[in-house]
Length: 165
Image (cartoon, rainbow, N blue to C red):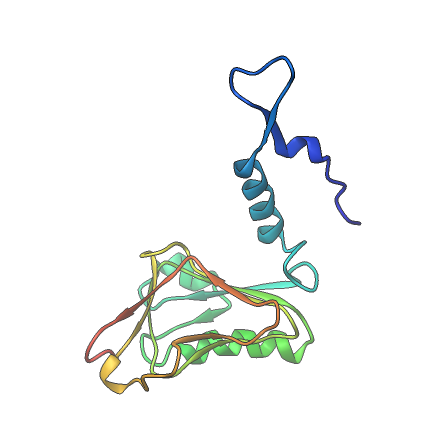
C-alpha cells in the first residue's frame, strides 16, 4: 500500500512571518522521509528487500563471523560478496548484502546484481573498507559495479593498497 503524503508536512512557517502566513519548503524533513523509505526498501527498488545476507570480514570479531552468512578469509573476498548476490539472484529475490566492520581484500570486481534490486551496504565509511591493489587493477574497471536497475551501494570506503593480498 502506498504512503499518503500530506504535502503540508513538507512546509514550515517562514521565520518571523505570521500575517499573512508564509511557508518555505522543509528540505530536511523531505530528506529524512526519503532516507527512511530508501532504507526500508519501499521506494527506489522493485519492492522491499526480500533477504539480507551478512558478509563478515576476516578482521571481524569472532561472534560476528560466527553468525554471518558468508565469511571472508582476507583473500579474494569478492568471491563471498558476489556469492551472496548470486544466491539471491538464483532464488529470484531482491537482497541487501550487509558488510561487517573490517577490511575486504578483492582481486576482482564486486558486482551488485540480483533479481532486480540489490544493495551492498557497509557498516560505515571507513568502518567497512574494500581494499584493492591498484598495480593489478585495470584502470577502467570499477571496484564495485552496480548492474541492477535499482541497485545501490553505500556506507563503505574503497581504498588502494599496494601488495593487497
